[in-house]
Amino acid sequence: MPISQEQLIAFLLDGGLATDKQIEQAQKDSAEKGVKVSDALVAKNVISRQEILKLQAYILGIPFVNVEKQKVPEETLKIIPEAIARKHNIVAYRKQGNNLEVAMIDPEDLQTIDFIKKTSNLKILPRLTSENGIKNVLQQYQKSLQAEFNELIDKEPGPISLIKEKGNEVNHDDLLKAAQELPIIKIVDTLLKHGILGKASDIHIEPTEKEVVVRYRIDGILHDAMILPLQVAPGLVARIKVLSNLKLDEHRLPQDGRFKIETDDYRVAFRVSILPVYDGEKIVMRLLPETNKALNLEELGFRGRGLESVRRHIDRPHGMILITGPTGSGKTTTLYSMMNILNKPSVNISTVEDPIEYRMPRINQTQVKADIGLSFSNGLRSLVRQDPDILMVGEIRDKETANLAVNAALTGHLVLSTLHTNDAASAMPRLIDMGAEPFLIASTLNCVIAQRLVRQLNPTTKQNYNLSKSAIESLKKQIDLDKLLTALKDEKVVPHEATWSNIDFYKPVSTTDCSTGYQGRIGIFEVLETTPEIHELIIKEASSDQINQKARQNGMLSMLEEGFIKAIQGVTSLEEILRVTQE
Image (cartoon, rainbow, N blue to C red; front, side, top):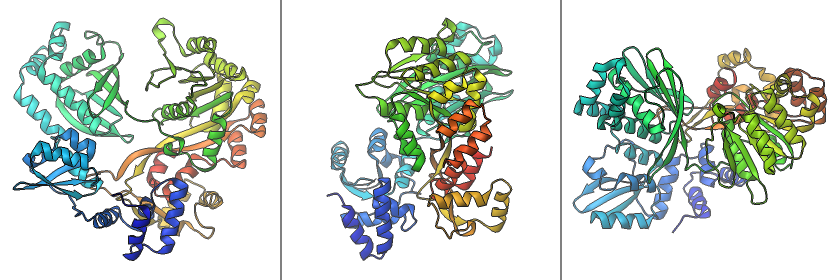
């Protein structure tokens, strides 16, 4: 039977693992943040995740095993198929005679245990383990990327050698033949599979003078994954062009395409960009998992006053909400999350995008096609005639689109869009520079959200620390620490008597399962509401500094301040906040 929170709390208190005061605070955090009491205790470093799991195992009467560093024999590992192991977080780790010991996160998953018993004809002995332990064993299903490539290249070098001999003179038929050869197909499949399982957002394939470099972008950071021999490059490019339905014999012009991979475990769309470079053609593939559910605002990283402001303006029937930030800062994800909240049978939502990154049910999505004259402005002009309640414009890039968006907001529509500026206050001067009338901007703009993405600390390995005197002095050269500390006290993030030397921060700790100490990303935001004072500044064509100053006086927190709050809460590290806000 499931373990109730009350039962777990009773055992924590009886075992002296937590005090009444710590439990009370954890229950308060649980109610405010919607997390389990046990998760709140782990977040406060009262108890470790492994201690919680051991306690749960004790209550259930099931042994706890640590398989985080265990090497499982291949014949034992494969008793449970990889797809079942990944889907249900259950792995076989020891076989003795007719007994099979399996490690799992949910020992109450009796249906899976019964399935394994029937298919293996063995007696199943369930054991409780940690998520990191499961990850360690799951990784053993996969050969290393290097090993898989070496095996492929050594086993069937024929077609690859053919490409090498022909060099740059390969014609259409040769490329098509190479793209259909088994070694090239296997190499591309392996690259894509490792990218998906590694949770990469982008795969880069870059030809150089002597080799091909493969890199994965994971949690916003590029990592070298593989070095391939140069002779595979033409076949690799040809295979990806075939998948993306692009021209095989076009090597001088950039090409963009798209394809999709579907299995029982995942469904991922790949957005492909091919660019001619000095040593050949560079490929960048953006991975767009289609199984991801839309995140709510809290999961994106919104909190406090900013969260309340965004909710309030989303509910308004007309006006404009802009999201700003550099490429790759998560603007599109925020837009899709807002549309998911607004997506009700009673409203008509239409979009014009370039590209359409995620398909959304009941939303009319239009893809920009500049080559046939379907631009953002032409698309938006047509959408207004489609009786929409809510319009989403992927990006405001020019004067015509800016004026159309402003006029749509003025005539009773809610308009969502993005803009490339570094902070929220720069959005208004940017629209004015594009040719939008200041008084119309002031009348229609509800709020501007600026955002960045930061890597989240692994909650099971992060380590707390205090700033040294030298670190504080170094920070003072970049940031007004006195002003920042006042803001943190006003937000009640730190006690009134806190100083920089006694505030807890957290740092990443790398392990064999998590080499960086980070897992996933979350947003940091500044939300600028267009109050009457801001309206006056827009009409006067005030500078971004003047608008920012007034917004701060009205209570807006900067991205840096929001970042420090998340660093103090243990969501991310101070170094990560400084990396994305001070670059």
